[in-house]
Figure (cartoon, rainbow, N blue to C red):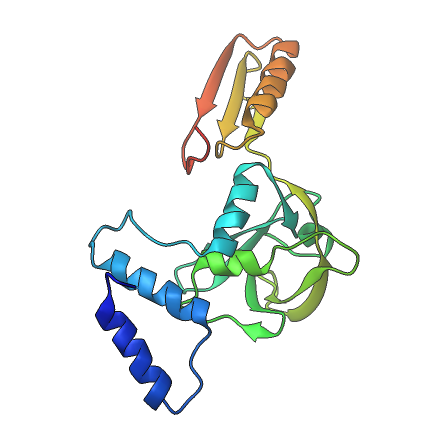
Length: 212
């Protein structure tokens, strides 16, 4: 507080004169941090709230508690859902491209960061834990609300197959680097070698990085 006496003075004025309820301490603290970082004018320096950071650490480890779905914002600003194979989300009927409308009854703010939305669909795996999603089907526009239980999600970082164009070529895609990537890559290579491939195509396109 000694470095920012004016900030302390402003908070004191708010405490004495602001008539409405102030946001919680952590919300104001996070806002102040974002303000300091924005003054750097560096788009690669940004603040990730602790719950989201913890969730991202779990995802980089390759395992987290949640419903097993990736999200993407489309050109209209809507949140599209892409469930993992055999995930709780897929078992609940979520299909690729379905539009997320609300989480636990809270309608999504168009400006809400994707990290925050993703965090809302994760949590501790225990009896009765889960999340309620309101979704619009991409296939027919039907809207529905579904409770989806949390489960342990193992995020695949390596996808592989023999290319149908040439049985001698193996294809390996690494989508991100997680704590499980080395073991997954070892499994992929062993499987492809067992199918007698003579060459490999290694695909790192759209890899967002991770643990290196």
